[in-house]
Image (tube, rainbow, N blue to C red):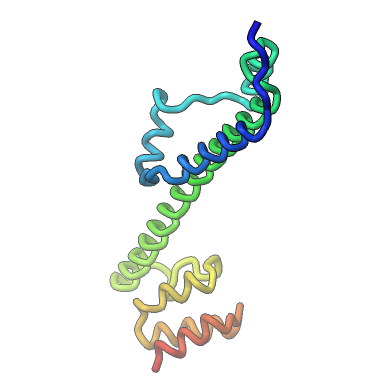
Length: 169
């Protein structure tokens, strides 16, 4: 019968070495991560409970110590969280920038064609101050004055008003 391994500093140093190797690996692009995540040959979904069961079984058979099993479980869960968080952050950044660009172009085309509401920025009340400021660059002086007057009567955000005044100069 195999004897249990000591759970001294060696398991911690192995986990530390594994983390360093992981962090030094070259990061794959967001598109590559999405492609791999959607490929059923690349992804395996295992619940924490099932991982715990498998590790408990290995401990009972003497294949791994309880401390090593706990460290391995924690490391696997952390890596899974990092992968998912990275994937979600990449997806959010990709879609956020694209959507804002598309809306800016739609606003510009709508104004040029003279269609839609007369206010220069579509969906103005739902935009953050930063989003409004980004869209001011496409506006002429008359449209900037409309935005300034509306902003003063409603949200009265200082950053938006300052940006409008800067563009009017």
